[in-house]
Image (cartoon, one colour):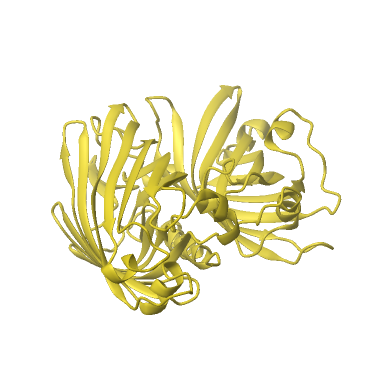
Length: 454
């Protein structure tokens, strides 16, 4: 079982579809039948706002193990991202790029995360969990949503599903009951359930459950899920399978728009997307050493160059003046004597807090996902020492500190330019997630950047 490269393709697609938003003229409305972008009249003229559908969360997923093993359950810490605009959407652990859409119908290039629930001690070796890619048709009318998709894993094992969901909201509660029928090809079932030892043939499984969100206060929400999957009889009869019914729960928290203050502070497009160009140098030191000024240099001088694009989401969090952005990044890791050139894709939510001390300074932090086309030397060498198999998909963090160049030089044309320092961080969240290969460790790069808002 191998980790699929499909997430990297998905991240690049999302980044590519984000940039047309940047390129759209400020005085023109995006031309879609039903735009995800808000357009309102203000002082007799149209004002175009960025989407208000956004969120970032994290929580603990617990699932039953269907295989004949001593362990009955396995747990994962999973980060979640939510966003929607005229070009693409993210919804927890799935997302799509719109090939075509109107008021009720969509055709999307689609990706979602597929779990393979096995005992924790085998997850680093197998790394079977993966983002798969395919095509999705979606129908939406009022609170009803229905999907049909055809998918493939990294080795072209195909499967598909049809899913119906209902979105209900009342007071502080949002409930999303769903039912899904999944068709799996013969080679898919042979690999993932027969473990290449038996072929149960193609078959149908059924899942149902409910996703829930409860508003605690301001932008803070409690997240929950309960679901059950029934495997087909031919799979249950396999000697490798012990349980026909697989139960799944999720409990976590997240930050989303305050549903008691809808569109209180919509962010106009003229407030500015951003572009950030950065160059960084690898360090074998961990985050604690970097933040305390004890970082060491990489003896092979591995370096990266990155370009990030940001879309404004909100200008407040918990009523504080914190600017939020969805940011996508393309990163190029330069070759050295110990590694070849390789690429990295990033998608994250980033927050900025500004302090005005005569000069404006900002502190920033981002949370998201990172996928590399190949494992970097700085990451691979650390994990080899710990006897881990590296994972191309890891959790992404970015910590930054910058200063406004217009203030520094007292020059108005540079008021939208910022010069800063950042830490480019990838890690596996301390072995807590099978999505990241159950590893402890990762990589860090110290970087300098220029960021321009427009």
